[in-house]
Image (cartoon, rainbow, N blue to C red; front, side, top):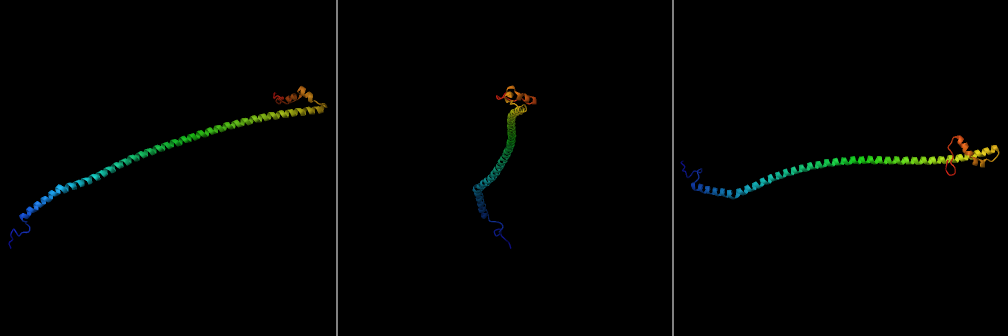
Length: 179
């Protein structure tokens, strides 16, 4: 069996080859002119979007890091300020406590001094009254012993003052408060 070149299935016919080549050229031209530029633009837009998203994410991360550092600085400043305020409050509390204690000590000393003055005044009054009564009793007793009333004479001569002076006590006050 001899085969002719026309019956060979592997070798295409020339007119089919020409039509196929023209159709291929038209398809390549249409694809190159309309489809590939749109695909390239879409691809570039997608790349830009991805790169822009990555860039925005990096910028957002950098901003977040800056804000975190700023927050940490503010937190450190706030802690320092709080410690300062706490120390000032403690110092104020100590100063107030010392002031209150000083005022209390002054008040205590004033009260003690006033009490001592009152006690001294009461003591002087009691001593004066006891001296007067002792003088009266002494004069009465001496009058009984002598058998006469010595009250007028004791007043005139100051017998009571001499008697008390001999005892070594302070001078009695007269009716005007003089000694």
